Amino acid sequence: MFVLDYSDRRPIYEQITEKIQDLILKGGLEVDAPLPSVRQLAMDLSINPNTIQRAYQNLERDGWIYSVRGKGSFVAHAAAARSARRGEVRQKLADLIAEARLLGVTRAEFLRAAEETWTPDAD
Image 1 (cartoon, rainbow, N blue to C red):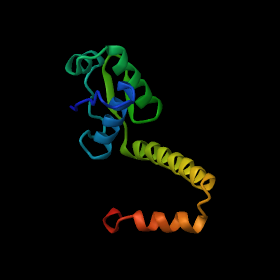
Image 2: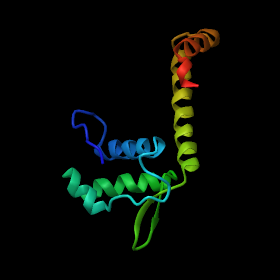
Image 3: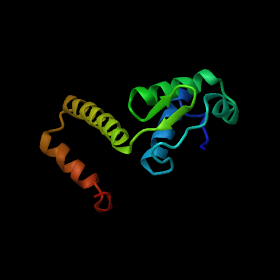
Image 4: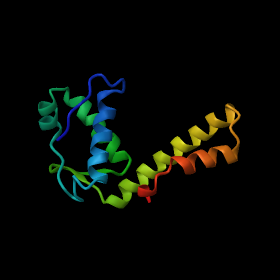
């Protein structure tokens, strides 16, 4: 399904959460597709099942996946996933704006930098 980066400073469950989100957004996992069981994914990645369980709980809490008792976890509708990710992006942007203000960056400078950074193929 994916490979973990053990040199990454983030906790493993966060890496798993992000990789599953990316797979969903890029169409690698379709709506209502089953995810591997906690035990199976833990075995595949050679990590503790509690780590997978934590990632799945976070994904479900944020609307990326849903669980069916006795059946497993499944990919939620893409709109919910995109909405959750957009919320994360907005929060990161708010944090970046706050940091820019602390550094004395003006609104005009910030917007100009954003415009210069935004590539034409991103639209």
